[in-house]
Length: 125
Image (cartoon, rainbow, N blue to C red; front, side):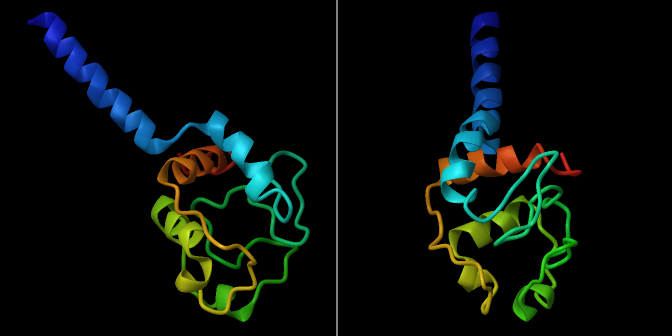
């Protein structure tokens, strides 16, 4: 009986952890999909796209030292996991008129991993 309960709890927590993503896997995805335009980390700066430190919990179009499109500045979005996931799946569908040139990412596992990685650089856990 104890073994079954322990196994069930392990499966539940394992599933929850997987749903949140693997930041190490996200660290491998970021340079390929995002790194051409965005930076994160201690020395991150805006370039072709804004730096993404603190993206989770930040208002869209609010990062200093980057000139955003009017669509992004006026979107009214505050980035959290749900809005970032929707945006990364379909940027132009979530913010019509965005200048972000990205076709979208539909793979749920990669999205969760990428978001787990970005959350390492955010104020929100």
